[in-house]
Length: 246
Image 1 (cartoon, rainbow, N blue to C red):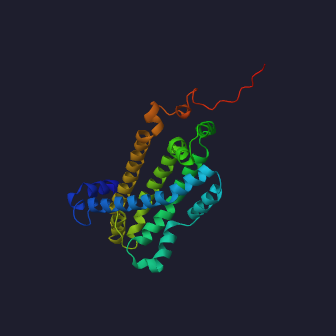
Image 2 (cartoon, helix red, strand yellow):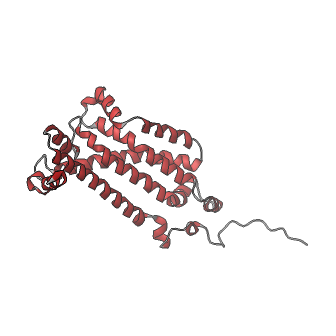
Image 3 (tube, one colour):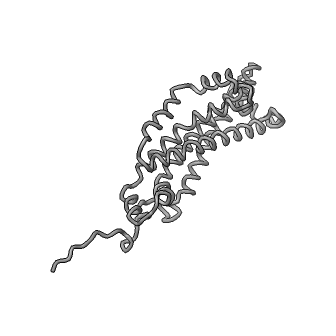
């Protein structure tokens, strides 16, 4: 039958989906871990990226520091955290390792999106008397939304794929199916677990693509994405002084 057929038979067996070691329970653990790590990453990275992007200062340093974390394997960070005093605090080592892994794409994309927002639109809004807070909320964030969502989507897919590491220190998630397969020398179970993780990553990717289209503030206002939607009407645009001649 082959490994693929045996993996399909494993997935088609009802007993593998129920119970504390079943797919549904492991899937719920995996989704919870992904949501927590992604939420923490966004809460840490987005405010910093938006403020630095608005000011146009210090962004390169912050982005380079966050990207330096990509050079260190997540597994190595997890091992070091497990050997530290945090190793006795449940899933916190896994959460911290995944958050450090998810911050770079969120921070980088948000900073680039805000700092490179259409300058004509930004200057027009500033000329209308908008405060910094209004400028960020009503102009720069809507213009940067596609790039921000791209960073969040990238981080979400990466966390879904890497959260399988949670199984190594005894945590939950779909990774437990894979590690159990290795322990039992059950290749079809290992393949089935890998297929589940890959399918979940593709599903998360699709969901965030749809969310990006549905929640895009510029599409909701105009029906299509165009920076012109944020340009002030001609009668509200700042006027240059006119010199009168006698």
